[in-house]
Image 1 (cartoon, rainbow, N blue to C red):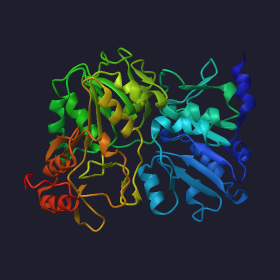
Image 2: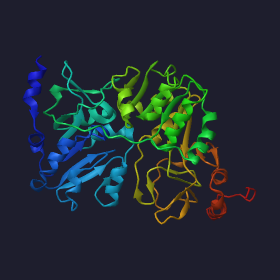
Image 3: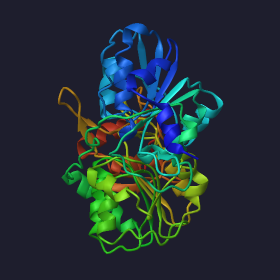
Image 4: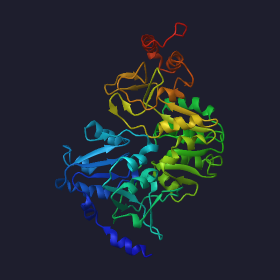
Length: 443
């Protein structure tokens, strides 16, 4: 086959390629560094020709010119499956709707329930076999593209080419149009310096992690802090099985701690998505020690549960005294999404020797500067990410507790014990009002 001839026959300018979008269409963009910036900009230029085009994506760095150019939302309506910091700001302005989901189910939503008129993805340059690599969007990319009526691929020469278990590539024969153009450096997420609270929380968790553990580290300051501290610990032969691959794993690898000898795929870590620094993208590029696969596999609790000593570490925003966990909203304000947190809570609980940790600082300051407790008597509009029936280890800078098998009054006592001391009396009074405080409980 002459794949180069087929390539040339499908090559279009971004402006030409987006002519296929019609008013009323559903248009999906790949997420994070695989977002097709040239195509999205060309689509924004067609604003006055189009009405009611429904756009979907998630974890987008921004800016979205389609959205920013249409504050009235007459031409483009944008919705996110999982909000990035940029998409959260759009939500605050009324320019982004949120679609609830669990990541392992996302592709199935598309296959069975959703309409995609046009799908657009950034991919690596085509290889000699006619394949483009889906790179850091492998976890959801192929399933969405297969659903679409029209597939447009934007070649980004800066994307890492990842090795896959399956569905990490799309063939030239599956694309309707190809576009090329210059791209700047890949966007990256800076790794924040650990706070004192991060270090205190890590001190409670690290002694509970054995050598040979397989790690799922979420995104944010606490998981990255733990990765750095584990890299300097005495632990050895750690493995990676994670929805999202971040810089923490690079630290572990460079310290000789990440060997993946205990993984199901011996010597290989598994992930579905990657967001981080240029060092991370260089590390995953053609790395035979890292496998990318669809999230319906990576995040399957059944798959996770087969891994011995599976350790899941994630952040949350708040918890109530029943053990319900919110990791995606502050009151009614959307912050992120469920993502795969519930998948890993469930899977780690099924793992022999597994543990699931949810971390948070005990307090935060609201927009007016007032100090607030992250542990509350009961939620008042906060979205529950993890039900109380799935709560496991919770940690703050004041300690760590395990809620498995605990009664309502035991949970209340344990959670109050790791709350900030200034809020404990108010929490006890709340527990008493909610009838989940025993007379014999400590004050």
